[in-house]
Length: 111
Picture 1: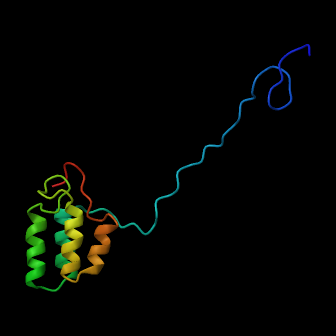
Picture 2: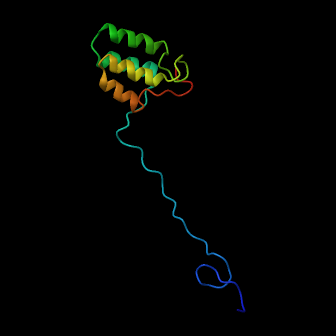
Picture 3: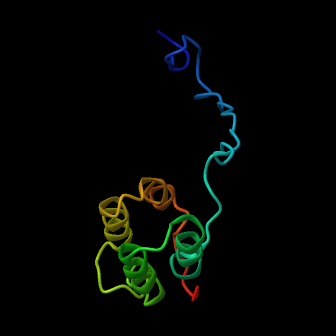
């Protein structure tokens, strides 16, 4: 055999042709995700607006305002898991769902 080397495509020489890979745009954010309000002010506001007065509500308000559920100030390793567990124990499944969906997520510097 004389001539150049054969490549996989049955062609001679030259190497592989460049492949164009389409770049997809990122998917849009889900419309069902609630707006983030933070765990201190936002959670306290939601507890005051949505939950009738009770000792459980007052404990949650105290703990939220003290930063127990804050992502950066909490003594807990997983403050949002603790928040969801306490909301569910108090029978506040709708607020627990909001916590799971990220409504009470904190950013550094929120206070």
